[in-house]
Amino acid sequence: MSTDFANRLISLRGEKNLTQQQLADAVGITPSQISRYESGQAKPRRTVLFKLATALGVTVAELSPDQILQVVVGERETNDPPFKLRQRMYDELASMDGEEIQKIRADAEEAGVPFEQYITDKAEKNFIEMTKKATESGDFATAGFYNVFARILFGTRMKLVDPNEEPDTHK
Image (cartoon, rainbow, N blue to C red; front, side, top):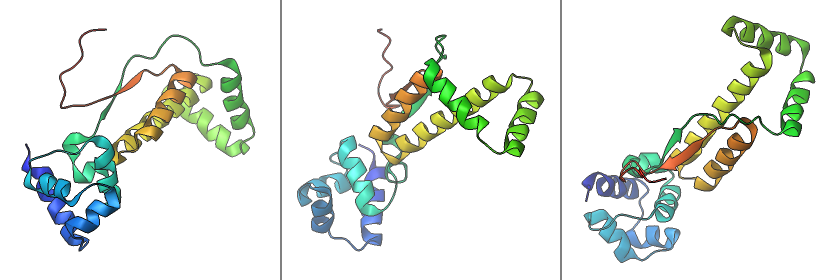
């Protein structure tokens, strides 16, 4: 069991001037479980880890970087995003100020890609980044939400994987 997490937990609890009892109460676990975490005898489940990080005012990545899930992006599926959603995105862009659109068109031209592809690629990258940030903060529900929308809108194939587990080679 890694002592890095235990040391971080002890340090952060000390910085917040919290007793094991107070932290346990904030998280909804027993003080003896906090003691097991701090002694390196146990490792919290992800749901408890998120609650610990929240109670200590830090991200999951700051509390336990080795326990965060990683976002793995695969190849984009070939199916087009649903027409109505894609059309709505283009309509929103059309309602933007003319100078903003011209800048985006110039950026697309500079990148050597069609305007629609350029904005789709940019939006997809933003969804991937938001998924990563939500995952790093321990907010797996939001990460899952972004993941689903990226798949619907762009055909993006992402999954959240535990870097500490063996890769699943069976499909």
